[in-house]
Length: 198
Image 1 (spheres, one colour):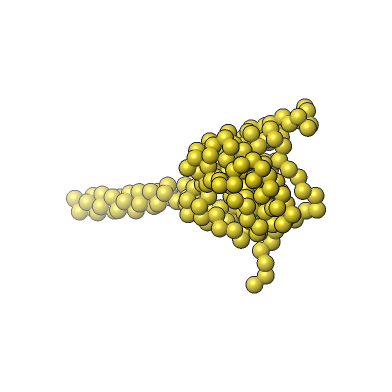
Image 2 (spheres, rainbow, N blue to C red; image 1 turned 30 degrees about the vertical axis):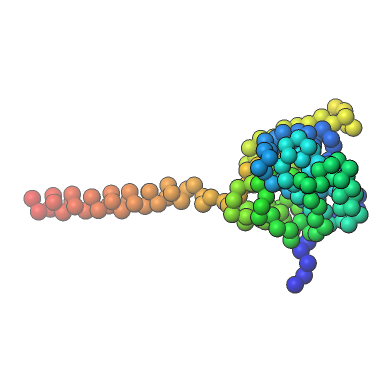
């Protein structure tokens, strides 16, 4: 089988600003019972802050081996190796079964690809996305963060609650309408028949 496409095929690697990292940790409302994934974790700065501030278990997924090595070194230097692990693999092929929260810094194409994987998990997951949001999904909250590197510019951060999709709401209403129509038609027939035999 052909390999899974990459979530973020690009030449230049961008790191999430520190201010956004702090805001994302707070936005996800994490506890020490959460299992947090960062898909395309870069230098692991987000996961390190989750471990430091909350004490939750964290998993970073990074396809670039040099970047993953840097992430592991940063995790060790921060003293959170017992909480943070780094996987070198394609995020679209990683096992997200244990995830309760996910952080994403991806282009829209990458978000579309990973959305299918998240919604197939079978349970709800808190997801924070930076710079781009999910198309066709309603955010729980959107905040804008001003970063010291670009003063005067505010960058968006989305919070979602994602999981198995519910059936369209109109189905229940349509079913009710059909039942009501059938019962109404039956009642009309009975009234008409009774009038005929009087």
